[in-house]
Length: 194
Image (cartoon, rainbow, N blue to C red; front, side, top):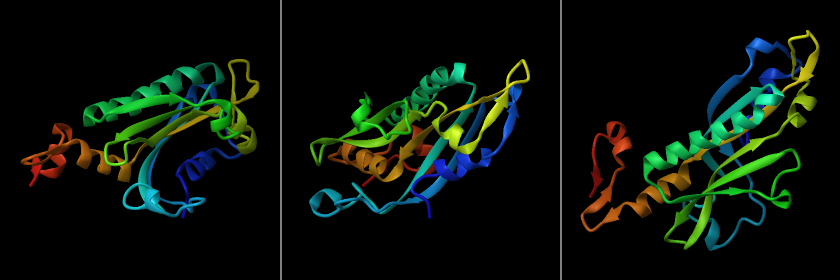
């Protein structure tokens, strides 16, 4: 029972020294996530908005320090491509220092517009932790001179599924039913919910 797959996946590299040519390491994990939300009561936590258990796909990378910001851009582009394929209204926020966890050097949040709630809801967060997690994990690599260096770690949620489902249901309503995005039709086997 984990709040996110980031922790167990990152720990694969605990006390590991990688060769430089083994980087980057790219991993993904699908997990049910369990959270106890502080102050979780009232109308804002009903339905699919804030669940104590939800599913999500996590993406994790271990990189050389000089490549970590290019990797962050690639991870942000990956999440953005998924949201675009689903045809959802979204925005990307670069969080200020006061809104980020103390472990992160930079974080981008993806938010979907909820027409029913008339507000933006977070569906993904992509972060570069630089060497913070690597230092705690003792995750290192040997550079071209044979010297050990700390890696950089990055992670992101490749969409929190309940809020995405809610947005798909809200955004695709027509008088004839809910239209399924074309990219999902091979998986649903139908193009509309009557």
